[in-house]
Length: 328
Length: 282
Image (cartoon, rainbow over all chains, first blue to last red; front, side):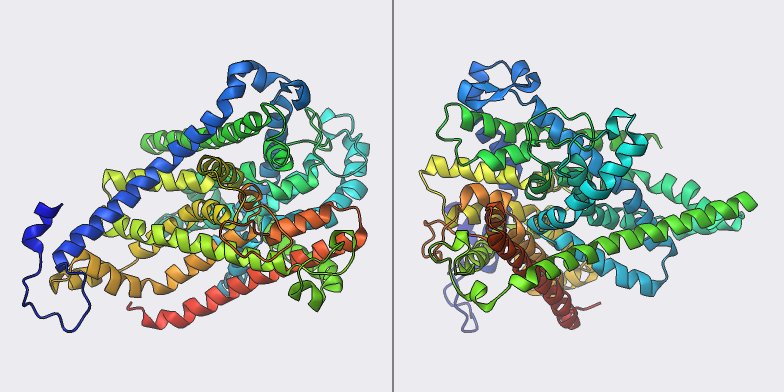
C-alpha cells in the first residue's frame, strides 16, 4: 500500500485552501475510497453464504441424530421426547402462503392494470400513495387487524357460509369454530402482499412501449383486448417477478401470521383448519429453546429450511424467466 | 362485437372493484386500529414506563418500548446507511454493469426476500459466538442486516437516475469519482436518498421478528448498548398475549402509537422529498 500511494502523496507546499486534510492527495483519497467501497461490496456477496453457514453449523447436532428424511417428513413434534418432525410446519407454511397468494394475485394484477392503463391521472395520483402507505404498515399492526376484523369475519360469516354451500369439498369443510386458521392468515397475507405486487406489476406494464398499444388499438381492438393480447403478453415476465417478490414476503412473514393462524401443529386439510407455520414455530419457542436438548438446533434448522426454500424459489424463478425471455 | 363490449365492461368493473378492495383494506386497517386503540390511549401510556403489575392491568405505560424502538431503528438505519452508501456509489460510479455489480445486485434482491426472522436467528447466532446477551446492540445489528438491501437497492436506483451529462461535466473539470460522488451525486440524489432512509427506518421500527431474538425485552428504558431493549411491535404482541381485556386494550393503543409513527414517517418523507427537490438539477 505504501509503495502504491507514495507517488501520489501531496507535495509539501501545495496550497490547500485552509482545508483540513488527512495528509493524502486527492488521488490517494480516491484510491483509498475505491478500495473501501469495493471491499464493502464484496462483503455483501458473503452475507448470504455466511448466514447459511451459521445456521447450518448450529443445526448440525440435530442432523447428526435424526436423518434428514425423518426431519422433513415426520409428523411427530415432541421436543421433550426428542421427536422433531417438521412436516406439519412446512405444510402449514405452504398452505397459508398458498391461500394468501391465491387471494392476492387476481386483485393485485387487476389493480395494477387499472392504475397503469385505465385510471385517470387524478385517481392514479390519489391511489398510488395510499397503496404505498399499505406497504409501510408494520406486520404486527396487520396482526392486530387480523385478530379484530378478519378472524371474527371468518368465524361468523366465511366459515359457516362456505361450509354450508361447499362443505362437500374437503377444502371448504369447517370443523374449526374459532376462526383462527389458514383462511384468516391467508387474508392477512394477501393484504400485505397487495402493495408489493401492485407496485412492481404496474411499473412493468407502464414500461411497455406506447407504439404497441397504439398499433393494437388502431387494428380495432378494445382496450381490454389490447391489455390481454399485447400488454400482458409483453409484460408477463415482469409480472411473474412481481408475484415472486410477493411470495417471498408472504412466505417469511412471521408476526401477522402467528397472531391469526391458530398455531396447532397438524397437517391441514381445509382452509379453515388451524395451522402452525415454520416462522410461527421459531418465534413462539425461541424462549425455551436453550433449555431443551436439540431444541435450539431444531429451531435454527427450521430457519435454515425457510431460507433454503425462499432461496430456491428465487433462483428457480429467475432461471425460468431468463430462459423464457431468451426464447421469446 | 357485443361480446367484446361485454367483456370490456366486465373487466372494467372487476378492475375498479379490485382497486376499491385494495384501498378499502387500507382504510379498514387504519379504521380498526384507530377505533380500538384510541379509547385506551392516554397520556400516561406514552410518558410512563410499566409499573409493577402493569401486565395485570395496573398503571404504567409503554415509554420503554417507544424509546427502545426509536433507538433500535435509528441505530440499525445508521449502521445500514454507513455500509449502503459506499456500496451504492461503488455499484453505480465504479463498477456499473461489471460482473461484480450484477452479482451484488442479484444478492441484494435475494437478501431483500430473506425473512426477517432468519436475520433474527442469524443475529442470535452471532451474539452466541461473541458471548453477548440479548441487547440493544444485537437488535441494531440484526436490523442493519434487514435494512441493508432495502437501502442499497433504493439508492442504486436513485443514483442511476442522475443524468450522465452531470457526472461527465464533473469529471471533465478534473474531479475524481469520489469527489463527484460526494459533491454532485449526493446532492442530486438527496431527496431520493432521504426517502429511502425513512422507508428503511419504517421497516426497522415495525419489524418484530428480527428483534425478538436479539434485543430481548425490558420494562426499563434502555440505558446501555449491551443491555436489553424493549420495542413497540413486541409490546403489542406481549400485551395481546395476556388474558386481561384491559391489557389487550393497551395493546391496541400501542399498535396505534406504532401506526402513527409509521404514518408520520411516510408523510415526512413525501414532504421532505418535495422540499428538497428544488436542489435537484433536471
